[in-house]
Every structure is written in C-alpha cells, then in structure tokens.
Length: 247
Ligand code: ADP
Ligand code: MG
Image 1 (cartoon, rainbow, N blue to C red):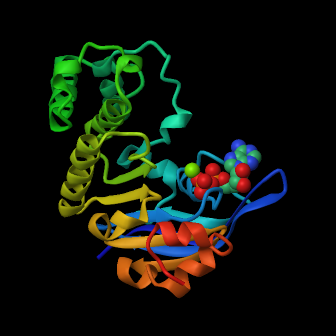
Image 2 (image 1 turned 90 degrees about the vertical axis):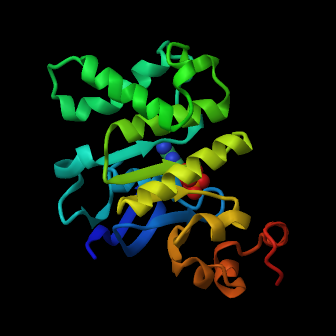
Image 3 (image 1 turned 45 degrees about the vertical axis):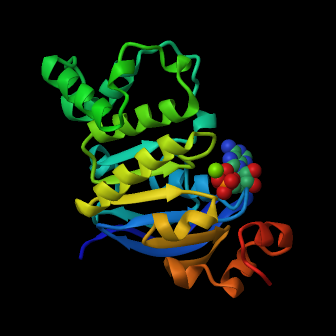
C-alpha cells in the first residue's frame, strides 16, 4: 500500500525550546491512527508541522510523496475546539461550504451544486436541521459535527482531527467515530489526536505515542503495553491508574 504520510527526522521548537525531537514514521492509506501522549507532549504541534502551519527546524515531510503545499486540497484539518473563535458570526451551512473552496478556485463563489453538497455533508453528521443557525449557538458536540461536515465537504484523502471528542456528548462522539471508520474503510487516512486511552482499542488501527520523541508506534495492542506507556507517562502514575494500566 501507498505511504500516505512519511516523516523523517522531524524537529520543531518554540523560541528555542524543543517540542518535537527527531520523529520518524510513516502511515499507510486506509488507517485510522490515534496520536496519544501526555499534555504538552507535542501532539498538536506534530499535526501543525505536518500541515505546514508552523515552521519546522529540520526534517522531511511528505504526503502522498509530495510536499504538503502540492497536495493541500487533499488534506482536511479540524483544529482543537479551543483554538476556534466560536463567536465569529457564521452560519452552519456557510461553515461547511468553506470545505468546498479548495476545489472551487480563488475567484469562484459557491453555487447551487456546492450548497447542495454542503447540505448532504450536514446530513451525514445529522446536523441538516441546524443549517441556518449561527455556529456559536450550537453545543460542543454539534460544533464538532459541523466541522467534520466541513472536512467531508472537502472530499479530502487525509483527515487530521485534533482532540475531536473533548467536551462533546456521547451521541456526537459515536456519530463522529462511525464516520471516521467509514472514511478509513474507503481507503482514506485519518489521524486523530486523542487522550481517552480506554477507547483506543475500539477506535484506532494504529497508535502514535508521543512525548516530544516518538515513544511508540504501531498496532494499538503493541503500543498499549505498560512498559511502553510508562516511558511516555513517566511520573504520572495516577494517570496510568486512571487509564487502567497497572504498574
Ligand atoms: P499537546 O497538544 O500534546 O498538548 P502542544 O503541541 O500543544 O502539546 O505543545 C507542546 C509544547 O509546546 C508545550 O510545552 C507547549 O507549551 C509548547 N507550545 C505549544 N504551542 C506553542 C506556542 N505557540 N508558543 C510557544 N510554545 C508553544
Ligand atoms: Mg493539543
């Protein structure tokens, strides 16, 4: 199978302080991959670096064998909810329509066809009856579903979602994971930053365990081994107990 994402010797720092230290990995198409690790481990930084949203110190990143800027249309990104300005006045359908922009070209406005497609995508996440609401009026789970609809509208090949399940209701979480598994089954690549390890087995095919460095990477069962987890969550024994890993 094709390598969707290939990362070699990636280093990222903020003001001279290292956040990502020498990561190598490759992900194949048709995988649902979880990125786990403690707070501040560099999970969001890693995704932003892959998307070329922040400068890197060194390393090579290829998506489908090309640089991200050449394949940007194929990549959808749902940022952490805390990073989105929910007071920004925009309707639900318009939010989803933004997903169609990459394929529209710069000077074209979305027409009936794009609007119908955006509405279809809202249906997939069960949010069509909210199409003319302000995004700020929705619950956390509804907002997250709308952002997933936007990613679906983009018809991307690779999906990055940063902590999509934080602060949302169980029904929304189930809708979202179901759709992500569908995308995976269609051969797309889905990468999700996640911290609730109890569900990692149900949700993901592979796990990336980060703590500045790459601590573990592979099939979920291989990464969720106490001795591997200990290396990432060192000094956080209460957390280890909480997630059911006994050491
Ligand atoms: P995670 O998503 O795993 O919680 P982050 O990638 O957000 O971790 O952060 C990794 C480290 O980089 C943390 O120590 C964080 O404080 C720092 N960091 C993240 N963003 C910035 C920024 N914009 N400026 C300076 N430091 C940052
Ligand atoms: Mg984060």
